Each structure stands twice: as C-alpha cells, then as structure tokens.
Image 1 (cartoon, rainbow, N blue to C red):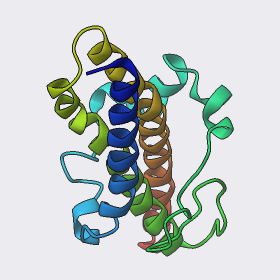
Image 2 (cartoon, rainbow, N blue to C red):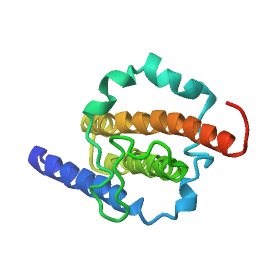
Image 3 (cartoon, rainbow, N blue to C red):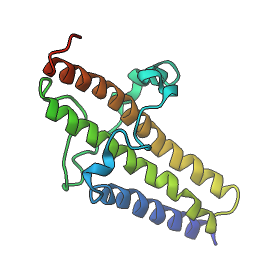
Image 4 (cartoon, helix red, strand yellow):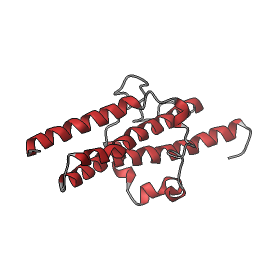
Amino acid sequence: MTGLLLVLVNFLFWIIVMFGAGIVVHFLPDWFYDCENIIFRPRRIEREGEIYSSLFGIKKWKDKLPECGEFFKFNPFNKKKLQRMKDPDYFRRFILETCRAEMTHIIPIAMYPLCLFWNDYPSSLYMLIFVLVTNLPFLIIQRYNRIRLMRVLRQFELLASGGVR
C-alpha cells in the first residue's frame, strides 16, 4: 500500500472506530455499566484512585482534556463539572456515565489488532502509539473520577441508612 493510501485507510479506520464506539456504547443496556462489572470495578492496584495522582499526576492535566459526554445526543451528560452535589441519583448517573465513557475508550484499543492486517512495521507501532495516546488518558480520568464518585455515593448511602461517617 502506498504511503498516502495507507494514511487515508488508517485515518478512515480510526474515525469509524472512534465515532462508532461513541455511538455503540449508548446502545448497551445500563445494567452493563454496573460499576461492579469486572471491566469497571475498582482494582486494588488503583489504591482508591491514589495511583492516578502519584503515578500520573492526573490533577494537573485532567481538566485540560475535552469532555464529549454531550457530543452524542443519545444520553447527553456533561462530566466536566459536578452539577448537583446533594443528589445521590445524580452521582449514580455520573458513575454510569464514567463507565460508558471508559467503554468508549476501551473499544478502540481492543480494535487495534484489526489494523495489523494492512499496516506493517513501523506503521503498526505508530498506530499502537496513536490509539494509546488518544485513549489511555481518558480511561484514566474515568477510572479516577469513578472511584471518587463512588466514595461520595457511599457516604450518601451511609447517611441515608442512619450510619455514621
């Protein structure tokens, strides 16, 4: 494949995969996005989100990346800023949307092996770097935010059940 044709094929492939992922995730049922699902549940290694601060310095850059939760009009939800601080249902929905957003960025990474059919080395390496650079930061943000939101929701539930903080 010539250089220009290869660039065009890769460009079209990634546009279709990334926009397609953004659409497909809205057709999966909400129960799939349960934060206890093996895909989305917090891991011990995440240390309640601390790994994202200590290893990745997430607080310095997370607010600089775009938020596209309202881009697709299927289930619009803006995750850029907390809106209703005292509403447990809002936090549940926010948590669901972090799972949906995480899946949006998992799909392109999972689709990477398909581009190996037409990319040789080093093009395949460039495609791997591209898919990781354009998706991993967003995955990290969703996991970090979800852990924090789950902590707040647990506090709501504890207070609602008459428990002590």
